[in-house]
Image: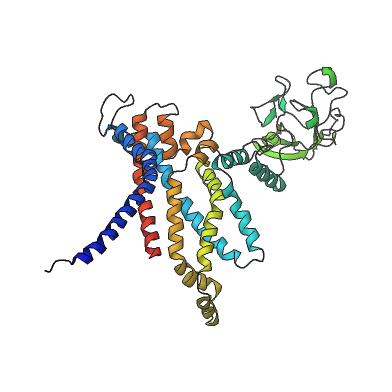
Length: 445
């Protein structure tokens, strides 16, 4: 092989020197980012892995002991179960909801304003969103907006109990457990008057239509008549068990005449508390106030109870991230060739067929990216779970991230086990990240 001419070598040397200078300059510019990446990512990962091999004190090497403890701890297994529910449910719902909303917004007049409204929750931090939904999920309908709506709807279709706090005076003719039913202690025969005195009703809870209680009226041989009244006179005067001046009747109270365990007659107390059973056969009866008169008012759904706390938190997550999914899928939807859609319509395809057989297949790459991105995000969810779940049900709502924090810093003080949980979480997230990076690279080529 012939030697390279001196003129060629002379021309190549400046080019090599220029390339070396460019590489050195590139390293100089990249070095701060590499140092920062090493300090904030590489070092914590390596340190966490090493720390996971030691016990809680950090002095005794336990090897894989912390990793074995993960599968033996019921609370950690529950966190893994909840994380699985999150990964399966939240990204699927968000991707489907984002797809539907992205398609629908193309057909509305104010699409931009609609997208802006749905995207606004993305501007709210998870901390603020958690506080908002913690208040929205409050059990007390006077504070929790969701239960206020639920109670309003319930009371629209079903009447509330008339006197939920009422109860009889002990030893004055009525007996029964708390909340009813309350029955007369002695049998009653037709023609005998009955006085059913109750206490525990606040003055402002007595209906405005209530009149002064009437003395038990006389009745015929086939009739039982009586009065249901508030056995408390203003100022505390009067005799317990007796209808005194100033005492109010309890209108609307349901009263039953019971014989041999069966309801023989039913009546409703009038404005003065009086009631009457007519057409009764001779014999002994028990006069009863059914428990429906004293049922506690409907308080709505226990959103943050053990059974619903995880779905409730997922609902808050959907509120925050629906706009993100809709905007990304909407951007992909804008790239679909319109001629393909128009050709399908001209061939007689319905909108449903176009959606299933054209829109969704063409959007598959975008839907995959959105789904995988949400999976990565869901695996790291922490703020919403920690803020929304009350202390007594925190364990029922825990995911891997919150369990890791609680074990390490939230009272467990076992940073060995916490570090093992962080490594497990990293190993679960890395495959989804690699998948997304490869897809981005393929789409860019």
